[in-house]
Amino acid sequence: MDDFIVIGGGIAGVSAGARLSHLGRVTLIEAEDALAYHASGRSAALFEESYGAPSVIELNRASRTYHETANGGVLSPRGFMMVAGKGQEGALADDMTNMNLTPLSASEAIAMVPILNTNALIGAGYHEDAWDIDTDRLIQNFAREIRANGQIITGATAQKITRNPDGWQVTTAKGSFTAKKLVNAAGAWADQVATLAGITPIGIQPYRRSMARIPAPGGVDVSRWPLFMGAGESWYAKPDAGALIVSPADADPVDPHDAWADDMVLAEGLARYEAMVTEPVTRLTANWAGLRSFSPDRSLVIGPAPTDPDFLWCAGQGGYGFQTSPAASQLLADIVAGTQLGLDTETVASLSPARFD
Image (cartoon, rainbow, N blue to C red; front, side, top):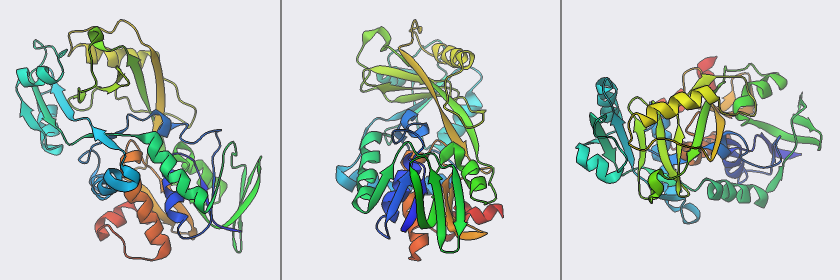
């Protein structure tokens, strides 16, 4: 019998499994044939410390050193710009305050992103403290830790979960696995896993987020451009491998599934982007969607279920899974080990599954 079974091979599961592997043997099971297939494989991959709810920001801050230094670090400079058009003055003012942005003149903004439309731009803000995350490297670093004291089984959907007197049994097409504790890191499927285990669901809701890749506007080098976003998160664009990825920043509630972009939603988002730039979108080279899964209060859910301390939640990452993963996974391990927690009491309580009891 193992010490831990982790269900879910996205960033939540591999980070939790890595931390817990220092406390006992871990088996991680993932329904797909590869790790990070769903939301984690479709992320915009940005570390932005001031992005998210208060509890998320605390996790971001506590994750920073790990991102910067562990295994050589996974961050590279990107920068963040907020831009606004007519009618978005209020949203821009809120964003400037909430995200600690420095006002930019039109000429300063255009010097950073030359395709911005001076006739549309009514204001902009910027800070350089935003970073690309090497998501594949981060996933593989955590996976290597798991394999040092455990195993990763892919293509293994949890078909049945049984609570036994001494722990849990998870039955899959690749066999049955037993452990003392069960970690629910199943992303959009977290409530389904809880139900399968006889644990009351929390109300984890997946929301679709669509993305399109377009050629670099005008064929220019976009590698040094910041991520730039419409005020109120109405759309965003980010350099990616010599091209731009543009998202309508949609958040439509959906059932858990292998997501794809909605053509109309994507077109509407691209139109909002085009309204702020001088280069029209003439073709897409790819499009996709991921599911950002939130708890009812938009904070992560980290810790034991109130009705069974051997059932551990690591869910509700929303759009913050990668940037919060070092601190969120360490919090889970500290709770299991009974060691001193690295976060303040209020933040820990705001993340605990007990808040929904």
